[in-house]
Amino acid sequence: MEGKALLAVSFGTTHEDTLEKNIAAIERDLAAAFPERTLRRAFTSGMVLRRWKKERGVEIDDVPAALERLAGEGYTDLLLQPTHVMNGEEYHKMLQQAERFRDRFDRLAVGAPLLTAAEDYLDLGRALMEVLPSKAEERAVLYMGHGSEHQANSAYALMEYAFHDLGRSDVIVGTVEGYPNFDAALRRLKERPAVRGVELRPLMTVAGDHAKNDLAGEEEDSWKSRLEGMGYQVSCVLTGLGEYSQVRALFVDHARKAQA
Image (cartoon, rainbow, N blue to C red; front, side, top):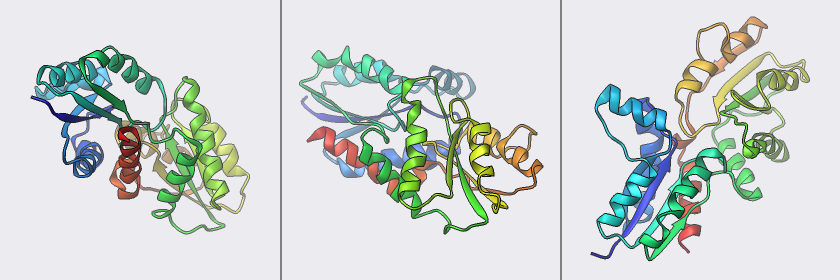
């Protein structure tokens, strides 16, 4: 057969609730936008794939397995759309894996992650401003990104700059595994002595382990606990980026540009 397919590639999550609310939601929007393509799923995290198999007996394809399956089924026109936030390690791993299959398809196109071109940061900022509380002197919004040692980690500082450029100087972006870390974000917070309340939000495709534990957990080292220990009134909005229709539309737009 000759056919078209769309492979949605995600880091993955072990949380079934966030899988459905975020990754599956993005996949549904992609399927609706490309009805002529068969939609398939792949995860890039080996840890996540192993836990799904061990804990639930569910086997989810990694990128090579998904591509091998699609080639074997006779698909000739393939569009890959990652749900990654930035052009980091997982995205580049996906690219390397996909490149080995290029000669197995007549056409293989790859969409960009959420934050790639300069305009992407402003687009995401505008999308998120639709769901943020109004700007207030006594409140700050603190986003937690994943963070990485990869050079693409600079995306987080650029995202904060974009928020400020759009008029939301009350937004601070930190990361759990990169720079700016919590201490760096805290220094930015203390530059505004009038702030009494902090709203914590994940800047991640899914609100999984990091959001539930590192950001909003009750442990003493969570961002929530540390801020409360300093006297701030803290609220948490544990909504992954994939839950927002405005953000899902950006992934769809990236896929359309790749297909063009």
